[in-house]
Length: 286
Image (tube, rainbow, N blue to C red; front, side, top):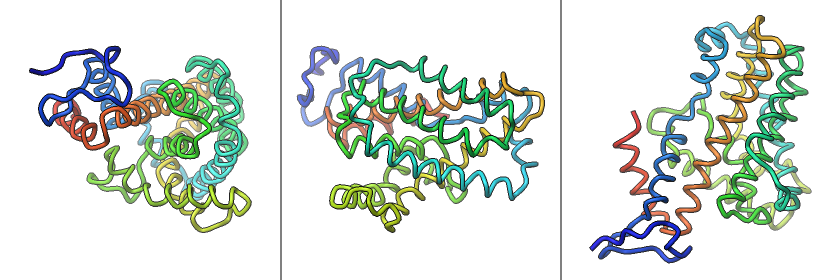
């Protein structure tokens, strides 16, 4: 007989079994379904298109190649700074009250400044915005039971920036949530080992560079989408704020899905969660 106890009746680390199969609590199934929908459809383009009123792909097509190179460089530099923030300070703020709304408002203010000055301000605005996003990601991680003093959690927070975008070299088989996690696994493991043994005193080390590059290859595409939207002349400060709020919400949704999956993996095991995730994806994701 299948055990129908809800999540509140199941102790952490004590999965329920029906024969050899793990049986998920109803609330956990609901959480996992929401996570699948967020992680398998992480499209910022659709959200921004609704705001600017024209297909964002059209704006992306007219961005100069030189501008795209600058955007990728800005994204990589922002991520390098975030690595310092993540490893050095995230755990110190674990008990501070926070909320998705507070971070959206702060991101909107940052975007208003960027929108007022246009793409020229992106290099200055992006590190501020991404730092705010990282704080929000960490807050979501904490709410899903993660220990912000753990190096694994800190790097998992940075991993969210890769999960929210696609690399130019990705094909259909490499864009799923677990595919991206698998592709990044070695870079994360090597970076964690290096940081644990040597700290961030040698930031230029090849293992750190590979970890940043593995994130930047996907994060950069989302930055390009954000910059393209803010380059639309009619938007200005108000539009810039709106785009930044969407940028923040995009990564909040991805973070929620990511840390829900990690929470369920701690409870039910990675294999069981992956099988259930695949089943939900087949039935619900188009």
